[in-house]
Image (cartoon, rainbow, N blue to C red):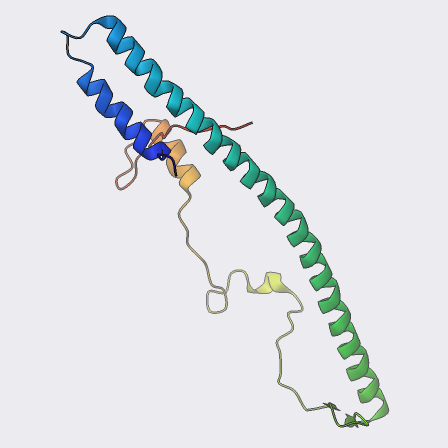
Length: 166
């Protein structure tokens, strides 16, 4: 097993310190750095290729997930529609129970629990008794305030180098 990119990077950093000795000939420094950089670049190419392959696989999985989710939603909708169809027809006919011939299931109409139906939601907007509000921080607003020069205690902007693979 070869040396990791992490260890190669650490060795490179250590070499930079060691090679800063002014008594070392320039050609020794240049040759050493070139050899270390070559290994780093080669290992970096392998890591980048692997990352790109993983990204491609992620996209393929997302496509499958969307297709499966759409199928699941379709099946859930159809199952719910069939349940409602059965419920409404049983209620319309006054049938309260249907049993499978083999005893594997029973469909029963029960009284049910009351549920709220809002006829006009706008009538409730100003009523604090029935309205709940959710608070959340807006990082985009905080960022804009800091960029405008405002002091925002408890927050700061941080820039990290980004990596683009293509």
